[in-house]
Length: 89
Image (cartoon, rainbow, N blue to C red; front, top):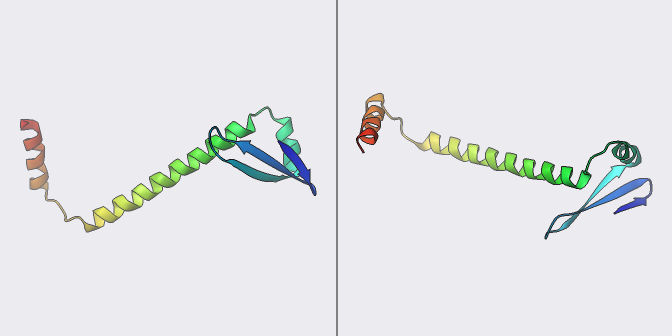
C-alpha cells in the first residue's frame, strides 16, 4: 500500500504472521523504485534479516573476545596433551 503525503511516500510492508512496518522515502527515490523490477517487500525483509544476523555475529564476537581476555594462557605442551587425549578416545 502506497500513500502519498506531503511529497513523501509511505511504503507498508506486511511480514507473514507478523507486524507491519512503514518506510518513508522521498518522491525521487519512489520514482526510481518504480523503474526497477524488484519485489521491494521481499528485498527489505532480506535486508532486515541480514542486519539482524550481522548484529548477532558482532555480539558473539565481542563475547568471545571477553572470554579470551579472561582465559588463562595454555602452553603448547598442554595443548598437545589435549590433542593426544582426544585421539585416544
